[in-house]
Length: 468
Image (cartoon, rainbow, N blue to C red; front, side):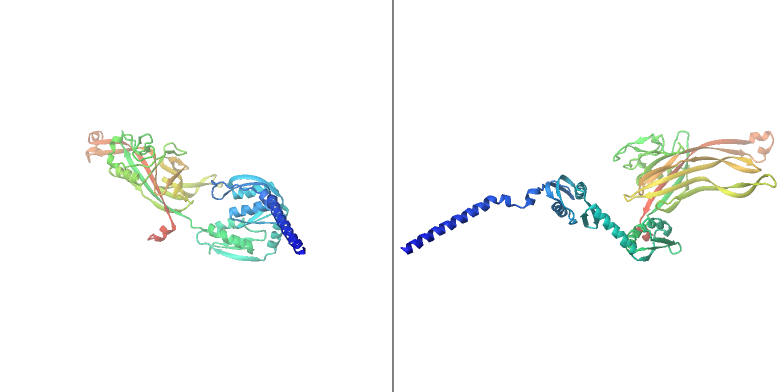
């Protein structure tokens, strides 16, 4: 009887334990949604499939700001260190924006700031940022001063000093030596390290520009209007828009053999100061065609073909003409009159001032100031003959590609020459001599063409040059 009672008690106990385990399991299953971490409720991240590189798409609702910054660090690949004082919940929605913008918006919205050093961003309060910067300034003020000497290879020491002065601390100073082209900087170690990174940029190689110029004078007939005829346009196959042919109104004078297959698109630019100058551009093929046309004319004269090399942003001056002496006067109080105290020389002829500006795209911007002067007549001042000049000048800025040619033309001038022919002896007899001599006045119209071709000289080209 006792055995039967124990057996029954054992069966009932096992049944009770099994039922309790099942109830516990059901209870855990039902309560699992409530046991999820808070971040699963707070953070909802929506990632768009079409997001630009470097951009992020975020959607947060009542999320811990530390978790938001942790996710932003992961998506941006930047180390973000969050101080313990940064707390709070964030609700924000941003779609396809740069991560820097997302960081700035989040921190500004919730009253925090950050400081970036390299690939590390520290997030904290504005008060702590101010305190950190104050401490950094105090540490810099306690740094020992050191002196660094920079030897420049390309830039002038005097020109670099101004930029370095802007980077010095209150304790720093800078000096230079023109003879050795060196710059001496005394400052804190940390600031010297910063200056070391900037000096190579200031001492970069300055590009050089070879300016090739052709100055051509040609005589026109009564029906010609050489120079640059900006109204005669020729549309050539291959040009993007009508190209202005830089020669006469009589197009039939030029054979099609002289025309290249395609001219570059050309834009006429009016020069300021004188309406007689006109400007246009030619590529190499067009320039060769123009020179070939000019070479067939017996009345064309190449006055000069100067070539000059100048540094980028430095002016080059070309003068083709004469120097005419002009007296300088001072007042003589003892004699109560003006006296010649010295002489200066006037440049008369063709004066061309060109300043090139090179950009990284292979284009050259030319600041051009052409001037053409001639003696018109003379006037007598204090017993000295003074020239009266006629001058045509202009000033303009044109951007052309490396190797292309700028054409300046339109300066047409009338010249009158007197020619006398006579038979010796008979032509000198009074009255009767008129029958044996002839006087001819010839009027000619001339035009002046100026071709300017800039060539950018790289350091490699300069090193390979035979003159180097």
